[in-house]
Image 1 (tube, one colour):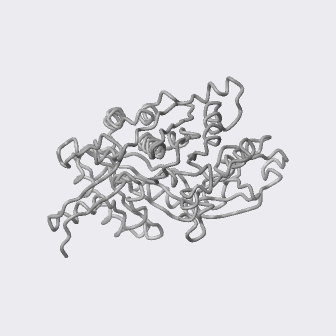
Image 2: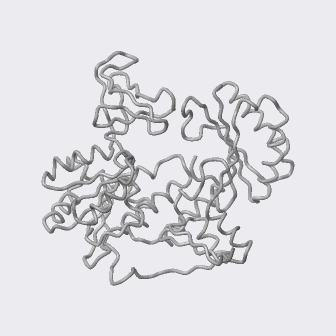
Image 3: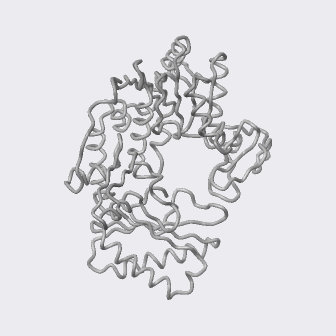
Length: 422
């Protein structure tokens, strides 16, 4: 009843955007809610979202910056390793020569290490070396991930099957797992550093209730030398004994089909680097990548948000993406793929028919990253416009059109403004 202040920590985090209906962003909701009663909102982040930072530069938000770390802690020194050069040297290990040496040094000093990889599982995918067939989930348009227990698992719907010994297409026995996952890295750590105590933290090892908290507590007490994990280990944790952080494959999040991929990569790497040297001992960060010149990787190594933002906002301006323009996604889903294609065609034609003099671009229908999930086919139409109100009016008209046409009753249609997770 007497609300005066709302604080959103790590405001850049994608988890603040709801993927399910009703779709909303907690940041926008908080700002609106505070406006109803004259309260204030504080958005905190070491790597602000491009949208929030643009509003701060425009004067819509007030901007305060912290130039120093808490206490006497210094920023870690960061080194970028070009994996192409490692390959030329004949190094086929997951770990570059420099990272391997630094891990050995930390183990000898009884200091702790965090290794970050944005992929769980043992290998990325399984394919036939004879015909090239990749083993996919029968219910989702994604590859099955190989786990060391001999299972192939879909990380979208949970489907699981035993590792196949014969290709279902050409019947060849030359079926193998490829790629890099947390389980594979864990196996490599045990092989190359047999005395090291390793904790692996990902969605597979934290399924059990309280497992997440127990692992972090064990690492904090010094019961493990190396904490290996996905992005869940790089967010906000404070371990004073961690003096080395390694980003094993920085490119994994860089080349996804998302206009925010550069921003997400910068945020993940910068947040990961921030885990090193938080105590009285200096920290070091090693970033392994095949694209060391990419602006997101260079800026994260330098912990330079302004340099990243300057480059990123140029690309957003060139392509007309948020926050420069507004984007609406019309998401359609149906069990009948033919009906879905037909409906999306009619929707696009309707948009072009009613847009009048409004300034907007229509893209699609296209696949939203994953074509099918749990036997439900998915399509998306993107509409870009300089004015947010233009998209709202268009959405209202489309909802009326969908309601009076019975052909849309067999499908689910959602509208998402400035989407983050498609």
